[in-house]
Image 1 (tube, one colour):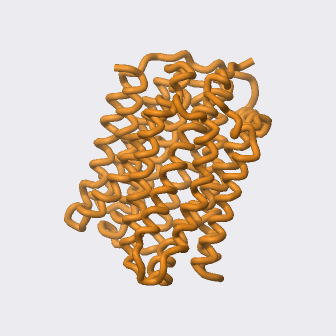
Image 2: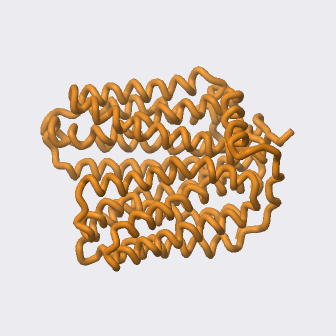
Image 3: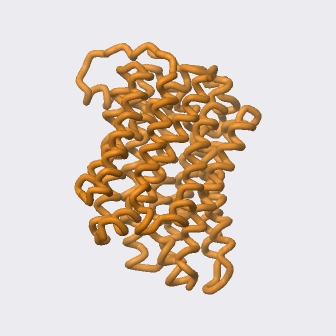
Length: 403
């Protein structure tokens, strides 16, 4: 079994567990614990904090340690977290529930960054985009399937097994990563952890390609979080449609992400990377403007089409920019580079959510949508005004080596 296939199987288990947590935390908190909106908000924040606070430490670990060992540790951390979460539901411990979810989240972060560092060691640069696409497909598939399944079957009578299923996914991932080959650990370098983090950030800022990727990701994720906050008021209060429209729209988004990943896996080697790197953020602007074409009480089809387009282009962009990151970053700094960009992404999301909520409450959902379209426009400009627009092939970038 190839390394990419093992990572793909491990990704199926880990992303299944992660999506169960994303969808299941608020549902289980309400059904099993009768949690208030404030408590649910705190639990969801715990998940976000794991990604925000865990990325930098995880990047340092990835750069210094043997990848197979780190992958095993990441999956074990998540497995223990999900087992603890499932046990907390059965025992009725809300504190244990929150702690388990947070621990599992740290494992997910470490796993994702480790995979990004293993892939360029396992395939040649000419096949990097296809490998990244294959590894991305399980996440996209889980983002489509899990909300639909959980939404259909979860109830007070079935809530006990939700996080047991997440633990099962992590267990399957553990068996897959156990068969990974051993890779050489990163060479330890002088300096404090803070200095190493600063080095990673400085490298991102010094590289025009990585700087553009970070800017594009920052504005896109800021806009997406603001959009999610805006959608329910727009659907229910302005368009006078059923709130379930939002759930179907998110399913369309997940289906598009899987479709985009599948297309990238098949055709990434035949399409100029620059086209994908521009199409991803560029398609987001008309996608969100489609939402403004819906009339009160009218058909929700433009909403579904908008969310499908919003998932299609950016999912292909994600794979392309992962490949660029892996090729232009020195191997002994790749963990920190990825961690800096991940932290940028997860730092932008709460800010976008706050801005979206403020605009909806102070103006109107339509104004917030226009604001989101402008933010997506800035994401496109970050790519269009950079050297990303001129990348003809991944082979032209070459694999950066540490000096």
